[in-house]
Amino acid sequence: MASGVSVVIPTRNRARYLPLAIESVLAQKPTPLELIVVDDGSTDDTEAVVARCGDRIVYQKICNGGRPAVPRNVGIALARGELVAFQDSDDEWAPGKLERQLPFMVDESVVLSYGNARFMNSNGERSSETVIDETQARRGDVFADLLQTNFISTLTVVARRDALLEAGGFNEAPELRGVEDYELWLRLSRAGTVEYVPGTLGYYRRHDGNISVPSYRDVLLQLQSVYISIRRQNLSSKERAAVTARLAEIERQIAPRFGRAKRLLRRVRARAYESLSR
Image (cartoon, rainbow, N blue to C red):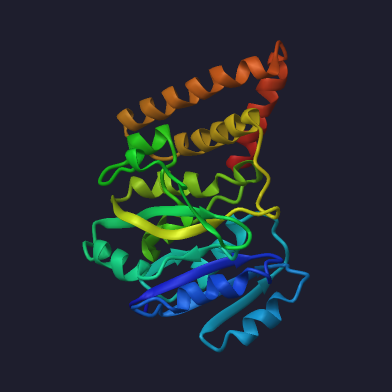
């Protein structure tokens, strides 16, 4: 395996924003070993846009998987670097991101480092609003804290490729669409330490093409699926107790939103178990 950083950008019909995302990666110092663009069945001119960006890009087109986990896993499998960083095709990295972040990965016990990002609109106008709450950011053994809230922003993550592969990559279960990154960070956090890099490492673009914001009830169902999946891991007794408690808390919040339809709640939970066991 080559040393350096492989950057994975999954994309689908983002030809408008993709050049800016690519440019923000290729402008980094040190220069990434490779930039892997995994095209998840685009029907616009994404391929032509990538071709115009030069031969520093590995381009792979796949049939539409419909879930972000699918192209990200393809990218991880293609990556040659010891480290893998993630970017989305409508977002941008901040200048100097890798230069600031890579020193945190020198310690081989660190499996993942992350930082904060700021929001911007469809025209690229940046706000002071941050993606995560700085007061919630944690470092070290973060599993217990991460169970309470996801403070890891995917477009800022640099992770060890070996750790990603050993963890099995992103879970492609349909129930985890939109939270597959959170589920993976929970699993990775058990494999080593996590480092937090202060400051802004990227810019998250809000626009009409973002994945739809789920309802509060749907968010709870997504979290239920996350904790069901995590409880299937080989956990310590302390970790299992923490996950079980978190799952019970979420399910207490779900129940009133199904009214008296307890059988429906049981069916939803059974479908999640069935899907996540595949």
